[in-house]
Length: 254
Image 1 (cartoon, helix red, strand yellow):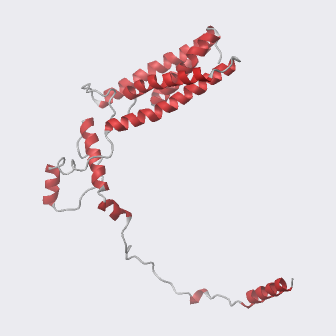
Image 2 (cartoon, helix red, strand yellow; image 1 turned 120 degrees about the horizontal axis):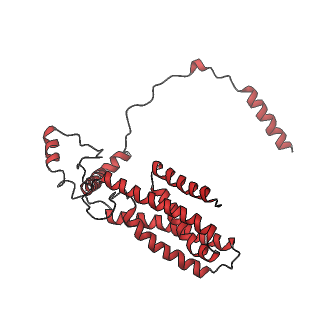
Image 3 (cartoon, rainbow, N blue to C red; image 1 turned 90 degrees about the vertical axis):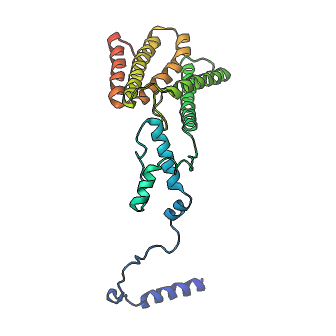
């Protein structure tokens, strides 16, 4: 107790005896603008040829999409006019040595796997919810088997119809159509799919027996959600309006 008293007295006496700081006595200095002395992240990236790999990747995508090779190239080499001319002449030869880490086909496969696993999880959830709605004993092996079947079907559809960043073509084939035409065709396909799927899902939930709803509602729900997600806003909103209009016109409920 005595130690604490002495410490408190010492701290109070020390704080009271602290001199006042005069702001006018503080020296003003400019910050150091000489730059970093060691290697920076840009230097490390340049030493690992990361910029050249990114350029090679972008040129490969441009070639597959039918775009000019220099489209989207951000990194420019600061060299003389002669060097620039040689780079333009040998646009492919200098960068073909630096192959991209992942091919467009592999990127398309990974993109499909990521999305379709999520869709299969949605199918699993909807299947469980429908069985709970009708107070049916849940058969987990059956639900898992249906989810795996949905994973296979949606993987095939997603691989061919989704607009992948690495390959924005409608199908992994050379259709000979411009990309903007393929995009509009893709939007039209998903618009029709969303409208028909939404209306039919509303129809079976109001007109069919519970057995039909149990079998058809989960895959139709996944197909409807995926179609809406794939569409642009100008296409998605009218498709939803069609489904709501169909429900109100026929007096159905949700």
